[in-house]
Image (cartoon, rainbow, N blue to C red; front, top):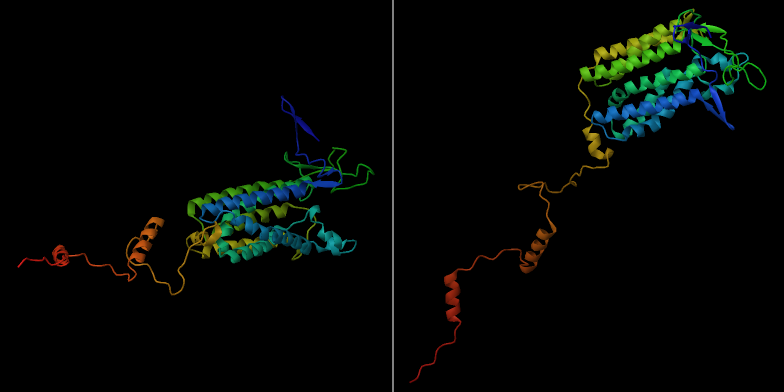
Length: 365
């Protein structure tokens, strides 16, 4: 590690890499890459929940969606990685079984978002929620999760660029198995902190860019009230613009198309154009999520009259008959079975009835 003197302390001239990316807790390996992915997922769900509720959605719905979207996203991310780097697993000297070793790294964001979106669509369809409303709420959280996930690449010493002498260059160390001394880049330990090379930290460039994109989406959503999937489209457009440039700096092995172009460069360009077109063409106000809340998403229900039942007319529609009122009504019904109230009596008629009812008087002769 080369250091420079500032007059106060010795500071590293370059960014160091972690000495290891895996710690053994007894028989259990604790992998930094997996921890970063899990932390990112938690942050994404938390952020999406807050934004979705703020838009009028039901609390707890995002957690239900995550049950579908997260597994789909992990499978989709791995499928994309394996499909675009298939020679590593199925080419000469490859081990196909390692295509399942997700803990070793290798999740393509394109596949994760695409298949994760399918899982989210299934969950939304089951609850009658517009997918676009959920996508707009999720956009900043997703890209923030991507930033956290890039820390996992730092621990794995992967996804870096060409050698550099820039002050923020990343030091790469030789990692070995401590017990045998054999090279082990993934689970080994850097016993010697002398760098074998200093490279462009492209993982760091993308991490910073992702955080800027998250801030941009939040600001634009508040400023312009983005809806109908436009906040999500803004995230996609901004992210792919940065990813296009960062991919050009990377030197790690990758599938190349059209001669010598990295496949992710092409994908970034195509997805960027699609997102920009969506932003330009789609219009409309925010989706009304109050109906989904009213139909049980927060434990409440809207009572609807049975078919053929009479509609209430007149009076106070909000009036609720109390037990006392019902008791008086029942008493009145039992006193007059006919159900017809008697007319009030005339006082004169009552007096005449009383006189006629007296016995006739007896006279003497």
